[in-house]
Amino acid sequence: MRKLYFSLFFLVLLCCTSCVDVVEHYDFKADGSCRVAYTFDMGKAVSVLMNLMSDSLKATPQFGAVKDTTLNFYSALPDSTQQKMTLAQMNLAKSSNLSVQMNLPKSVMKVSVSHQAKDAADLQYYLRNIATIASQSNLKPVKGGDMKDFNAQELLSGQDYYTYDVTPHKFYRIIDKAKFNAFMKKTAATFSMAKAMLIDMPYKVVLNFATPVKKVNNSKAIVSADRKHVTLVTNMDEIIKNPAVMNLKIDF
Image 1 (cartoon, rainbow, N blue to C red):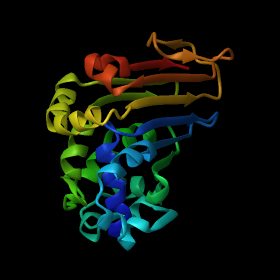
Image 2: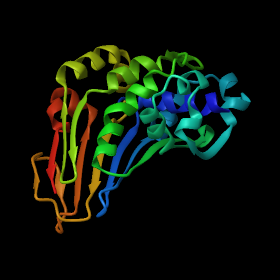
Image 3: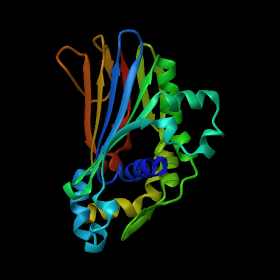
């Protein structure tokens, strides 16, 4: 059961920057804590990919399985990964949850990863390390039926292309263009497939604050009238052309 959910998680992460709706959600509280959640909705992509699947694949019990569950991220990790983790890594994983909603015949495939950070330092550690922890899980490539196999480790090692600077009164992240370009080279075939199937690639970042923000440096970011909510809406086509569109410097 553990391997099933974790394999689903990595399948979605592999596709997350090429054929799903992606939302990063941050809720900063007055006490300094923050809940961060990444949601990957593959519904649109599944509806397109179903046209490419054979009838025999659609008839399998695995394809018809319905899932709606939440489990602790640490419990979803293989035993081999748990045994190699430091105390800080274990605490990170134990304070994170993995939620899976799946009903492929109805084009439902959504995965969320959430973490409750107790303070700014905890949030920064999470953002800097969650991809590394996941990529060290030694998972086998995920089989995609008649589709190409997906290598989760290659994806996640490339996903870690942000530099974070988080304090009690600022949230800064800058994209590392060298790492991003390396990621793009590894996933070029996936992007080409998504574009060929006319699959949209939207990406949204939502940040909610307990107090009004003082400064936001991204011109595409929309600040609410009360200055407590910041939203950045873009897509992978735009990000590929200008990776800096994902840079955020917010003082609050």
